[in-house]
Amino acid sequence: MQREIYLDNSATTPVLEEVAQAMEPYWSVQYGNPSSPHMRGVAAEKTLNHARRTLGELLGVSPNELYFTASGTEANNIAIQGMAAIPHLRKNPGHIITTAVEHPAVLHVVRYLETLGWKATYLPVDKAGRIDPESLKESLRPETRMVSIMLVNNELGTIMPYREISRIIQDANNGRQNPIILHCDAVQALGKIPVDIAALGCHMATFSAHKIGGPKGVGLLYVKRGTPLRPIMYGGGQERGLRPGTENVPGIVGLTKAVTLALENLNANAAHMHRLREALLERLMSIPDAAVNSPRDGAPHILNVRFAGIRGEVLIHFLEQKRIYAAMGAACSSKSKGRSHVLEACGLNSDEILSSIRLSLAPDLSLDDMAYAADALAETVGEIRQIYR
Ligand SMILES: Cc1ncc(COP(=O)(O)O)c(C=O)c1O
Image (cartoon, rainbow, N blue to C red):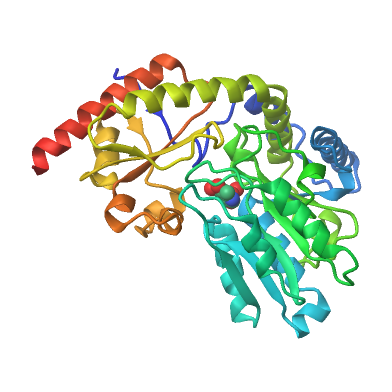
């Protein structure tokens, strides 16, 4: 059978064997509802508490500051809409700052707030997809209530300048009656670069299990103690009322195992993926009229490239025939056929945007896989150029 190479790990990853094993007992043996008063429920509640404590230790925060959610998207919605649901802000919508390159799970929530009367600023980015911290400083207003900026961009791998961002917010909050809440979408950062919540200086941070070898449909929201927030859904009061709904116990066990492995192996995995990306990049840049969109100093798992005159969409379908799986950009926007808002914000022209593809890596890939994929890409680019000449 033809070799298969999966280069779409920013869309999702396969569940790691150890994660699947850790989850196994919680499907049909230890299946209790953590809210049930009998021993099955109590056992499930203990499992949940243990998971929260483990994650608290791993992330360097209090377990009480962690909330399990049904996805990264849901965590982002609770963070942003939950802030806007505070009674005085519901009556007097304020100003929110985000960036032009956020994931739709932030961007579309901010657009929704605009329909409620909020004012929004979408910070521009440079060619590498990075904001200028000065532009954040200049955008702050007395009525600014929240700043939501991702740590690692999901299309380019760009790392946002968080040291400056957190300093600006800290300075702005000095003496402010209503502090500006800083929210960080760290979904693409965890397990790829160090994520130190205290150093980020954020009040809220979002994570998702399925980008790091965990199951789909489980997210995690960090909320710093004292951060004002209201639920956006109502129900049985689980997760201290912030995210009602019976907890996904197997999923939460899987998330905890995936985060444990990702952080235990962070340095080795990051160094390995960095080597893979460099090797892939070097080979791809020898293809005529190739260019790279990702910054060299980005997170190690994402490489966004383009080949002049070739539609990314066509290239991806040709690669698929060779069992090499890549993406146009974010999985959600690829399907909707929209042009990448990220590459557009970076100033790429229409042809450049449409010719771009994202290759995203995982630690289980090898240098040999990179050589194989790069050769297949070079061959495919040649084939397409022949056909469309
Ligand atoms: C940066 C970023 N934020 C949020 C999400 C959404 O996470 P989930 O798929 O768990 O809803 C993704 C997933 O692609 C992402 O890359």
